[in-house]
Length: 119
Length: 460
Image (cartoon, rainbow over all chains, first blue to last red):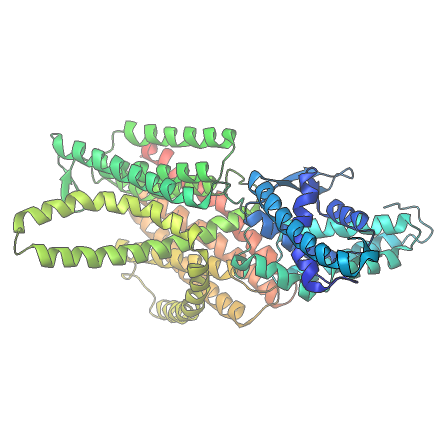
């Protein structure tokens, strides 16, 4: 669903939900700003097909992790803002634990075999 | 966008490109207006940023579009997320209530309708006046007249709460219902009189518009919401018919099984329970429409696809037949009523067919629909001629005005439908114009129904 530049497709897909939830946990935001935040945070290494963000946001909304509200941009256009819900925060915390376990496990092994990477 | 760029064609070509891209994205129907707005504003923001970085408008546009992804992949992903849009283009606000909570909520409202009807029935059968009949029961005349007040406002309240209707339109709706209650109960109707019958027929329709406004959460200006109300109405009818069928089987079996052991009791029990069941089923059917969207939304277009051609044949035969046989004695009062029902059913089918249109391009179904509509127009004109003749002969009555008004409204609607379908077939107008015509017409019907209830009785 997401076309990465240099990270495996499945991995980007797996990252997408916690990434979006984490960005929205910083504050209410909208599509374009979320993508810019992803680009900045990953220094351009995590690349999405921009349009695919929106079906993902809608899926998360359906799951009750986000709520949407319409606002107006500086240029006066209608803009859909996304806000994280308590259910979304719980989901984020859960995903975060999983990712931490995963990176700790990988780091524990790579840390010995590939010390130069410094995970 | 600055109009003082050196090449002043540029803003318009960009607007054209964006409009074309937007049309392509929306073509598959999995992306609705709001989603397209969202994608478009993303596109515009991206273009603005790229232009600010020094790119030309054309370059910025093509890069921004490429970043958004291939249109077919994008729409396929939308379709996956919004599976319910394969037929529906729902933009209704999703109820923020937890799904589990909505079942007890639905049951509570269904029970409320059932209890209200039951209490009213007990009151109506314990008074002195049993001059009216309802479900095989002798009841006081106020009961059948007020029955829809006990049911449909409950359904409206259910939607107002589930869909978090804003306070102001909710208060307006309550006021309208209150006025209708006063009007219907303060006029001294004669039982079985013309005006009594007319109000009895039109009141549920008026209250259904109240339900529709609540369904749209008060957002009556939005044509998409109006279309959703139309679809909801059709699906509700299908679900209600299914429930009624099941209820009929249950009743027949109950009679068959219990009559041998309790022949006297069973009749009374059924007449007592039936009105409550009929009331509760309205809420249950409405809930089913929302909860089980995917079931009927696939069924409704199929049903219209089957019945539109059949009705088209029947209408053409009827129109030709009545034209040839020059009706003098043919159009009596009952036949006129039958024709009104026929025209309403045809209009329902046509509106449904339009709401379920799968793409912007004209197809065979549009031709069939046009044939059906033209035949219906011929029939409607015949009916109108017969009506004017009756009115000329016997003068105006409330019933005749109500019927005449309805037929004129139908004629205008059908004529507009034929016109816009014709333009669509001639590739001169967009399909949206046809939908718009129907959604714009809804308030006309609502206003007429109100006039019939509020104005006609005191005049006659």
